[in-house]
Structure formats: structure tokens, C-alpha cells
Length: 118
Length: 111
Image 1 (cartoon, helix red, strand yellow):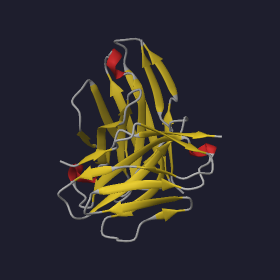
Image 2 (cartoon, rainbow over the protein chains, first blue to last red):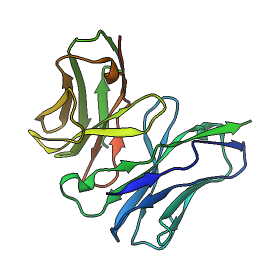
Image 3 (cartoon, rainbow over the protein chains, first blue to last red):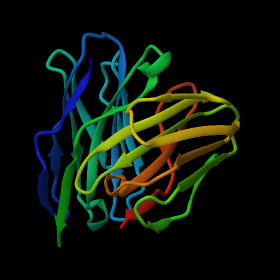
């Protein structure tokens, strides 16, 4: 079974600085998707970025980018020019590429709480 | 564009009372639907998922149940709530099994 591990329960960053959140996963599959979700104090889960494992190029979305290391099974999220609105829980998630039964379900890490200092 | 609604937003119920949480999706057809629970300070736990009307799969055995009476409607129920049922309940949808999009959630407190 696949697992997702976020080893940093809490992180802090100064406004306008850069922060990297770590995520590792365990799988025997060669093709899959990885996601980062953000959960602000409102608690609604918001998709931040996605990465297809078969793509070597790291995904980017404005100030958010990932460092995807497939061999190391690592998927970190870099937030550049941090803003106060980036303060939230961040969840890393894995999904099998092969859709069927429960294989299409997301497997979440336990999250990292990010604080942004003004 | 697709939107997902959940209600109620908050709910306080006594132990032993019934529960019904509703989730509806607009702007898409035949979505995959999911119910998650998030206990305080913890990650998300998948409770149920559905790939079509009347098709429900349970991930965690418990006193909760789910139903999908219509294509874009997903209901989470319980006949008798337990204290341990307190938490934040999130409904999500996906299309073709890609990324999931979440509703605003329901905060349930069982007293």
C-alpha cells in the first residue's frame, strides 16, 4: 500500500522569504500523480499544484513550485515570496494513475502547518 | 464551471441522535464523489467514495453510512452519533479520477 509522509508538523517563514515543505512517499508503482493541497483557517481544501510522475519537468504555479525526485520518492513544495495569505496547513497527496476501485483515491500525508511572520 | 456545496456548515448534535450531511455538485455529470473526515489537528481520513448512483464503497467500518440517490448528490448519515464522530467532514468530487475538488466542509460537534 502507498504511504505519504510529511516530516515537518510545523514550519515558519518570514514574509517575502522562501520556504520549502517536504514530502516523501512510498509506492511500487511507476506512474502516479502527486498533489499539494492548502487548507487555510476556513478549512476548505484548495488544490495548489499537481505533478504527473511520468513528467520530468517540475510543475510550477506562480509562486509555487515543486522539486520532484522520482528515484528518491520525494516531492517538496517551494513557496517563493511568501505572503501572509499563504499561512495554512499544507497536505501532500498521492494518487495511482490506474483508475479503478480504490486506486483512484487520494492518499494524504498528515500535513504541515505553515506560519508566515510579518 | 463546477461548484460543490455542503450543508449544514456547522452542526451540534447530542450523542445518540441521527445525522444527515448533504453534498451536491453542479456543473458536471457522473462525478466521483468522496466523504472525508478530519479530526482536530489530524489529516484526512477517507470514509466513503462513489463512482455512480447507488454505488458506495466504504473505506472505514463504523456507524456512518453514505448514499448517492442522484448523480450529483452524496449524503452521509448515521442512525446514532457517537462522541468520536465529532470532526470536520469534507465532501469532494473528481472527474476521470484526477485531482479532487473539495467543498467548504461541515463542522460536526457531538455532545
